[in-house]
Image (tube, rainbow, N blue to C red; front, side, top):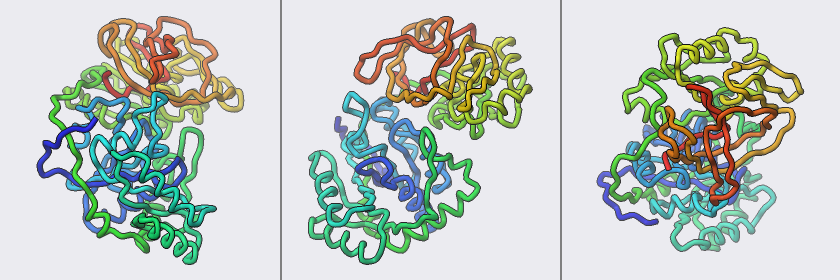
Length: 439
């Protein structure tokens, strides 16, 4: 859906995409952001899709918040609003492969690029490839007429001889090479289930970003990239509808076990007049006694289940808040903590807050992944009955027991697989779904 340009003095930027996941686009995006920051350029980072982990690296590299852009889950007004937050320049990191999106076939990085009419730099891993890289790039460049692939940045380049072979092949095919990132084992981004090890968990994060920028600086055409940067095309849109704040004063869990919250949601709550304060369950902190809402976002509580179960101040604080009538929302990992107990990967059961009749296990791992269309089953803090949302589910936990009033009726991105999910008990509610936007 192309939109006419109405923006003046727009920021300019690019989209960094890839043929597939694990091509090195997060590393390249972070290295380029840090390199530009060194040169005094303020570049706003964005991440396509429902990703919580990659934005941590991009935020650290740029020194500013990274916002998600989700062309499937977000309205055009929401996307326009988020893009308008960019400063003089921006960089958007794609998700998965360039043309990969929801099971419905839409919502890809290519869809966003076509909608905003932005140039794409294709990040290609050259491991195990020679001249075939040029054919791959050429195929991606020609696949959709409404998508502009301006050139490539090549990663996993093994040697100067390998570099020459790759660049010569690309140039012969009419593919512009903007940069090369040589193979360097010190630049490995470690991974676990759900994605990379979080940026906040890496003690060497700044060293990693500096080293990545050093390596990229040896062979990157910054002048060429600046020349092809473009302003996004955007149409007129009124205020985007927002997820209503849970209360007037909201305690938000934040640490390495509860790190999956969207900046745009918290910004919306603040803009609506809510006060937000953070607390750390892993440090055995409880929500402040005067809050009227608590938000437990997703993360990795299953990796810290024993510690959380032993943090009695935290768990008692949740129960006290619920007893005082506070609204409590748990998403994914936060939902698990609101239940009776969590079974860890070794099969040990750890008691949790006991506010919902729920028991989950990480010992029986099963992937649950995909976009979700949701409607509320009853009036509540999130809106009126049948209020509609879009969100995403991504976890490996399984449900052992889940009894009580359901929170959402959901379907997948195709409008299929209709089921009821989540639980609500008074002001306490949760599900495995991360809310992204109003439908």
